[in-house]
Length: 204
Image 1 (cartoon, rainbow, N blue to C red):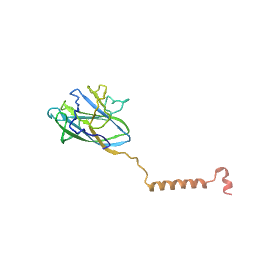
Image 2: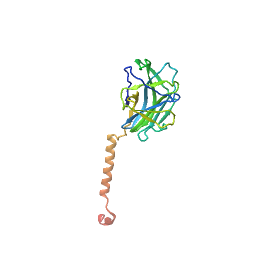
Image 3: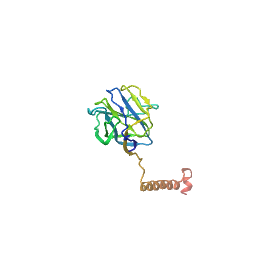
Image 4: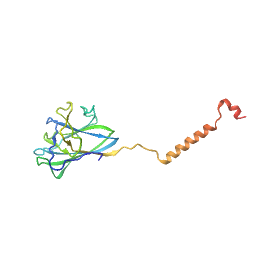
């Protein structure tokens, strides 16, 4: 993992329902200190009464003066292949089973502040589970293009980003040696040349 707000798994998670059709769209913020290749995303959630299926929309938004941009300018997808696994022995505050959801991604994120939004439009009473860590802030809006409102609710939303740090290519030692030899040759040739103004004196 390159960023983690792990699941609050002690059975006291209330969660936040997140469904555009249900009139509740939520997001949580995270920060990266360097560039990463993002390869996977996982989050956790539960269903209020019974499972009516999944139709997830995952959105990644950049920062707009300390809040999410209105439009998902990094990722906006409802066609991801989402796998679901029951967390053994873990339930929410209503006694409902909590599940882990996983998707594969392929995108680059540099350093900065970002926001993740996950919605399940197949079930407008699907709850995004609480996290055990974070900055105790999440974001909320009703309509798809409404401004976001920060909710200092005292909890965060559970998700994990996985990937690899992007490392700039560094020349191998042999390449450095060749470069230095080339530079030293240029210097030697420059020193051996005679200025045109005294060329006749140099060559007799």
